[in-house]
Every structure is written in structure tokens, then in C-alpha cells.
Image (tube, rainbow, N blue to C red; front, side, top):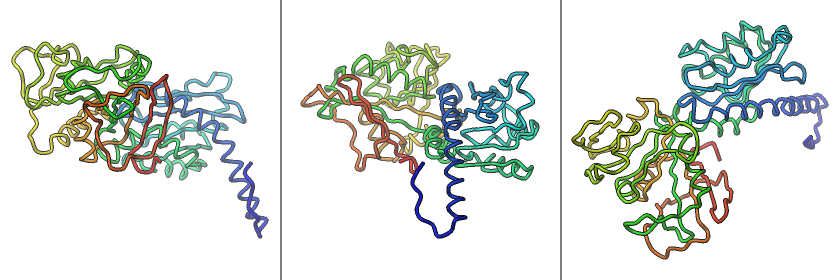
Length: 371
């Protein structure tokens, strides 16, 4: 337990001891909520990632998570998981949620009503829900009904877990992730040719990242040079919506992004031919990115993964339209010349870092409050 300062009041010291002890008791169960919530990564957007745990004494009697968009929420699944022999313990149990239970009717009924219906007397939450349809109203309703509600347990960790959802709600646009792989001397490849940078294992990681996004975007030059599929064939999971910026119709008809094999947006003039899964968006020259982001928001595409190239990255950076940077650096590869990575005046704080062989993987969060 952390060392306490010396207090003149014995009552104050006891109060602080109780507060620290309470937080220590709650944290393991909130962390379990985080673990459960992450199981649905890539499956619930634009909804948040939520896990819930029911605890009687020091025993977990039920747990659940929001597994898929439109399906039952975490609290509902946690209550449903309680065995018949433990059902009578629910009113005396503590309910842990990493996000405030929902207050409004959506695709499912309000979870706050479930809490009251089950007569649960204590609820412990990491984050209140920033959605204006909730925004503390569930906490108020529970407290008004006599439920003891504790908030703010591991609040920063909870905000990091649901940073995409928080962006979606606060900025009314997708959470934007810029990703690139570069040589040790800062080049993305040689001019006009495909240049392998990262290792096969790192490529598999980037395909996992694709499954966690709603949409993936590249610029015209990258699409022309690399002829990417923009799928996630190296990792199981849902494929993102493919988007290519092609205002000048440089993409050949034979390229993968025009094969109509999966949902695709081409931000550019329409092409002749029959397309069933490809949508052409002829955006005006003024504020094209903002209009594209607005269109994504209207269609519930809450996480946008931007893979390149450098000119496209620079476009997003110059407009301040990014929330994360994910940079893979092959520390053994020096190109000497080529396409330099995009420039950013003040790189956001480093949040995560790891090595995969010679590849250094660094993740930076641009969103305020998550540093």
C-alpha cells in the first residue's frame, strides 16, 4: 500500500486509508472488464468496447462483454451468465463496468433499467459515457434509486481502451490512424517501385490492425505503384471498407481496388462498367478530406486506418486530422534516397513500443488527455 503523508487529523487519515483500500479492491475487476471488452475489438464499432463483471464477496459469479454491434450489451450478458444456483446473489453483488451503462433505447433497451430491475445495489465504473444520450444520466438515475455508484476507477486506462469511441463522439468524425513503414533513414520506398520494408511478422500485425478498423485508405500514387488489395488475408477477422483517393482517374481498370470484390469507395470520378460493391465519390477540390470524413461518419464508419502514401499522410497531418501514428521502422534497412516519410512538427507522446526482429514499432496518441 502507498505510504501515507502525516496528517494532523486521525479522521482524515482513516478516510484516505479507506479510499485507497477501496480503489485497490476495485481495480482487478475493472481490469477484467478491460480484458473482456477487448475480445470484441473490430466487431462492435461504432459502439464502445465494454466488459462487465458481477462479484459477490470476492467471487465472480457472472461476466460478459458486448460481442457484436446490435447484439446484447455487456451488462445483459453478465447477468445472463450467472448460474441458476447463484441467481439469488445478484442483488447483493457488485457490478463492474468499464463504461457507464447505457441510458437510452437503441438497438437494445437501456442497461441502467436492467441494473434497477435486478436490484443491484453497487455499481463500479471506469468511465462515464460521453455520448450526449447518456453523459452521466445513468449514474444519476441509479443514485436516485439508492444504488451506490463508484466512478473513475482506472479512468485513464479506460479512456485509452475506448479512445476511438471517444473521438467518434467528441469530434463527430472517425478516429484516424496514420500508419507507415519506413527504413532506418526515414524513407518509405524507392520512387516508382514496390519496396518491401517490414518483416512478414510485422505485415501480419498490420493486417490485424486492419481488422480493427472500419475503413482503410490510400492515396492514388500508392494505389498505382503498389496495386494493394487492402484486405486482411494475413489475419482472420472482418475486412475494412477500402477507400482510394483518385481524383484524376490514374488507377488502371485491372488494379485490385477496382475489382469490385469487396465494398470499396473511390474518391474520384466514376468509371464505365458494372459495379455492385464500388461507390464513386466525386468530391469537390475544396475540403475533400472533411467531406469524406463526414460521409464516413454518416455511414457509421468510426475508425479510419490510413496506410499511405507520404503525400496522403501529409495531407491529414497538415489539416490536423489524425489521432494516432503507428510507425514501423526497419532498423537494419537504409535506402539512402526515395520517398521520405511525412513530416510532423511536434510528434505526439509515445504510448506503446515493441520490437519484432529488426522492426521497431512505435505508437503515438495525438488525442489530448490520453498521454
